[in-house]
Length: 112
Image (cartoon, rainbow, N blue to C red; front, side, top):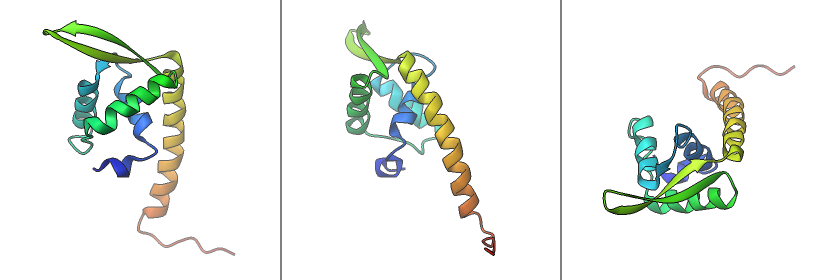
């Protein structure tokens, strides 16, 4: 799935990827890939700028850690990020239900 297809949903996907705990950027990419059975495979050039934007918005925070001889920046949800994820999920449920109803192969209701 191309990044363009995810416009408007990328932030929610990144927040959901971080819900289980802190991850470094590449692990976020891997979690999205694994959780979507390979359908969502985003480039680092899409994910890292979005993580930085979410951090500036106060939805995630980051810290540097050293492990395996490398410094890595790990990201985690803030309380605001948890609230934003809840709001995103509610909005997605409403949106996906409406779109699914419209895209099903069945006749449109007759308007009277």
